[in-house]
Amino acid sequence: MKRIPGNEMLVSPYLDLLLEADPDPAAVRNYLQFCQGLCDLRDDCVAGICVFGPGSDYSGIEIYNVSVASRFRRQGIAEGLIKSMLARAMGPVRVRTGSTSFAALSLYQKLDFRMIAIVSDYFTKHYQEPIFENGIQLRDQIVLERKARSSGH
Ligand SMILES: CC(C)(COP(=O)(O)OP(=O)(O)OC[C@H]1O[C@@H](n2cnc3c(N)ncnc32)[C@H](O)[C@@H]1OP(=O)(O)O)[C@@H](O)C(=O)NCCC(=O)NCCS
Image (cartoon, rainbow, N blue to C red; front, top):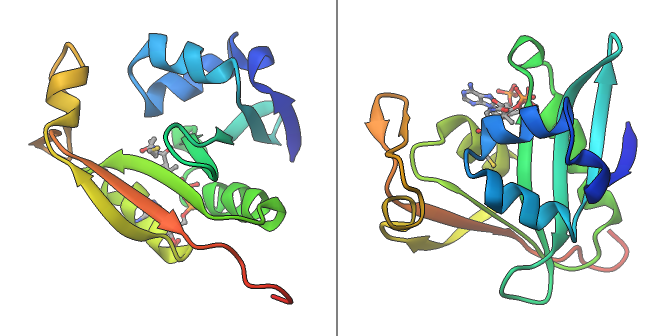
């Protein structure tokens, strides 16, 4: 696993992988300015990335993007990246994802994130093109949070 400053991920192959998870290039370029990433490198490829940084509207850490290349999925890469990131985080960690992103919702809940809010119509208001996932139009954003680790944990 390799730690990479966000501004070094503004190029291929990092950027391509991040855009698979978040189709808004302007948003991705924006958060890469103040975030950092953890990368899982396999067979000389960037197999997976987790991008995190200061919270967009609260004082804890936020995960902005998690993406694993399709041929490396279901091998525990995303789980490993997030666990590694969480091991260093003392406070709460939040993540926002789509209501139709079922793989991501399973992943985060497996890692003890709990749903704390729904932002209705987030994706229809903020994205120019409609997004379809799992055969359903994505409209709403789900905010999940993992509470701070208790001391001695
Ligand atoms: C979501 C994503 C990051 C998961 O990466 P991954 O490396 O394949 O996930 P892991 O192998 O670490 O899986 C860990 C857990 O996540 C859940 N999960 C992962 N993929 C899943 C799927 N396709 N369906 C259901 N649950 C899934 C499971 O709970 C899994 O645990 P298990 O293997 O014990 O069942 C990957 O599918 C991806 O990049 N998707 C496109 C981008 C995206 O949706 N990013 C998240 C939005 S921010």
